[in-house]
Length: 277
Image (cartoon, rainbow, N blue to C red; front, side):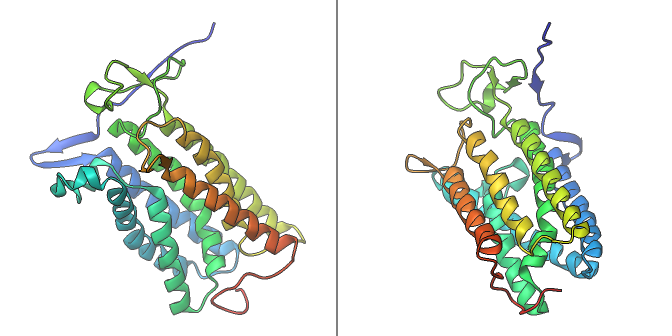
C-alpha cells in the first residue's frame, strides 16, 4: 500500500530576536557558498591548481552572482516591483534567479581569469560541481518561502501552499507540485555525474578536455530545468514565453556545440591563456 504524504513549510524564519530574524533562505545560501568553496578548493588540488586562487574566485562569484540574480529577477518582474520599489532590496524574502547568477558569475570569472592570467575554462570546470550542488541546496529555500512551486496536483508527494502564497486563479487549490524538490533531486544527479567525470578524468589515460565539465553542466542542468519549468505557476515570462525555458534551450545548444568542438573537431577552446595549467 503506497504511503501518501505532503510537504508543508514550517515558515521562512528559523527564529527571531527582537527585530532580527534568521531566515532559512539566507542560511541555505550561506551554507551552499561555504560547502562550494571547500569542494572547489579540493578539486583544484586534485587538478594541480592553486586552491587559494579558487578561494579568491569564489569571493568574486558571490559579489557578482547574488546582485545579478536579484537584478535579473526584478527586471522580469518589474511590473510588480515598480509598484513597491522598497521591496527591490528585500532579497531575504526570496526572488532571485539562478540564470542571472550564472550570467553574473561567468562575467566575473572571465575578468578574474584575465587579471590572474589563468584558464577561464579550467576555473569554470572547478566551479561547476560546486555550483550545481549549491543549486540543489538553495532550492530548499523556495520550500521554506512557499514559492517556486508547480501546478495543482494530488500526487502522494504534494506540497501544501498557504492561501497567502497562492497565485490568482489557484486560490481554491491546496496542493501543488513540489518543483523545488524535483529540481533539487535532479541537480544532485547532475552533481554526481560531474564528480564522476572529474575523477574519471584524473585516472583515465584519455583525460577529459578542459571545458568538458562546464558544457556537461550546461546541458544536464538545462534539460532538467526545461521540463520542470513547464510545471511552475510563477515562471518569469517574456510575453507568452517562459524565460527559463528559452535560456535552457540556449544553454543546451551552446553546451552541445562546445562538446562537438572539443571531441569531434578536436579543437581547443579560445581562452585567456594559451596553455592550461
